[in-house]
Image 1 (cartoon, rainbow, N blue to C red):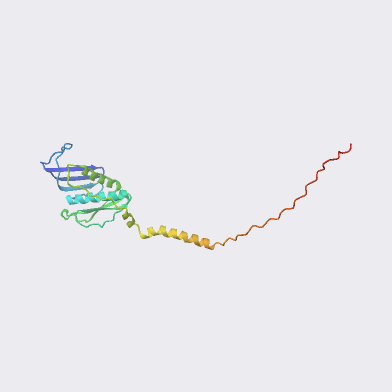
Image 2: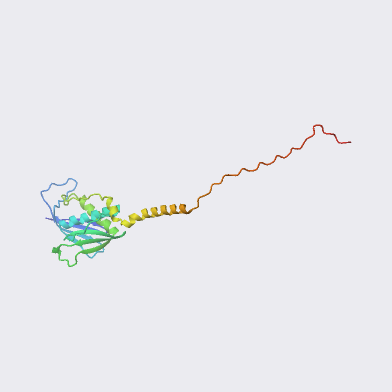
Length: 219
């Protein structure tokens, strides 16, 4: 029996179609039938005139590309990778802080003349796509064997993205300031140290003589 899973957000909808094992043990907390065989995936983005679709390989490439790009976007550390021009491959690239480009190489079975397909999405659409993928991985009754493998982005890639000039400018600026200060001190005249002269000792003024027995004035 065909089964469908749909994860809907305001700006993105992820739809999975397939079959399941009727004899699979039921989940006590979720009575839905298991979807274990995937036949088709559709990713619809609001405002985009293209529907991303494919099979299991496309889904794996989509969740890997979106999850890795979200990790880089939130951390601010770019992990450079060479784009792979293969069917069902997906990757994202940053245009600016609020705009991103999703690039998809459709399978040859879809007969889509435009290849690759490029869709510009906003940051809000990107977050809805991330949330749809998170809901899919949280669904234990849909493709439980599919796991996401992500590794932390190393901080060393941050230095790779910086140009040599941007890394040497602070060093050269500091070295230039040091040279300028040394040159300024070199051009300043050497101050002459003069010994203080001994000031003349002032002559002592005679003190007035006070008579011991003053003569009273006449009457």
